[in-house]
Amino acid sequence: MVCDEMLQQVPRIARYRRELLGHDKNALSFWAAAAESLVELRDECLYEELVCGNTETGELAAFPLGANRQRVNRFLEDNKRALYLLHRGIRCDRLQFPELEEEGDVAESAESLLPLVHLANTWFIHARSLIADGELARAAEELIGVGQMGQMICCGEGFVVHYLVGCSVMGTSLSGISLLCRERLPVGVVADLSAALEAWRKASGGVATCLRVELCCHVLGELARLFEKSTLEEMVDELIDRHYPNEPMLPAEESEKVAENDGRLAWRRESILRLLEGHPAPLDKTATVRLVGDIVADWIRELQSGIFDWMAPWRQIAASVRRSRFRLGTMKWPEQLTAGFPYEYLGPGADARQRIAELKEELPLSHWTRMQPPSGAELEIARERLRLVPNAFGLLAVHALLPTDIRRSEQIRRERLRTAKSDVDACRG
Image (cartoon, rainbow, N blue to C red; front, side):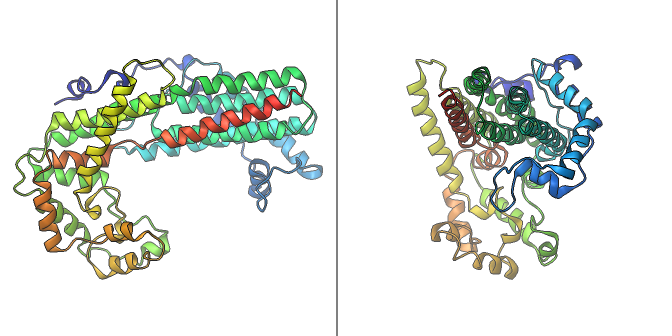
């Protein structure tokens, strides 16, 4: 099954086909050029104060004056070209991030976003300097620009990780708008800010793009790669190698304390294969593709719930049933054998058991109990239960490959937009 065939199994609302944007139509072209010309502020303490405010209170204090102000002025002067290119970028129609390398990981693409965060912070510092100078209309224009940058990243043709960084950029803009609302704003400035916030709120359905892109440009490709393997054992190895944590995620000094080559990875692999042994139908490729497509489509419909759909009540019932079945199916797998389980707690070894024991007081008992490594007898019980679950390995693969659910994050972002608009509108009085 190739990706084009897979795409036909995905609901239309979740499909995406990449059409390469021209240089002059892609905001990223201009922002990449801006990143190349960016001159960083080398004083990390001053930079943090300008962007994040007081490290103790978390509040944005008065803009630095005196010698610091002169340094900031030089910093902004050095970045005039970068600021120009930022403005040029938001005038583009769309934003398209690069395709993922064949052997690349979605999380690795986040590294390319760090320069964009620095650019947004530089833009924010420029707006703060304008507020300090009393140029409130220009400051509002710059803060709207930062917000538009965040909105474009959230709704651009990228992955979920890009959306999350876009939320951060938009949060920077909203912090500046909150700071601006402390001033006595002209009526025109209030109107411009209110209109921008309302436009971003109304266009929120566009955030679903990242789910389409991740599904169609990453998840389906990974499933195709998985399905190319000739045996179930090879598929298990492929899934574990590419989508399971195979090393500690602890700080370097802690990672050194985790025993290496202690058999925990072999135990996990052998346990998964043991649970699948003798299963009458461990993998249904078509059902697997349809399941992941349907789940993402359900999320997209919820994100776009403002669009009229007379079938919406029935779709919600179907989505609820689908989520319930998926959750019950995946719960048949011991938690230690699922993709999200941390390496350092994995397996029946003494090191892993000690680490899990240390969590007992910090976690609900039911969660802590599920984290325990299954014994041989418990594996046999799980094996018998999984024999009754159709597409058991397909469920495990979907659990490993599903994009991050952004519905809660988006709910928070939209609420922040509504709150910011209410605060701005209150300035009319």
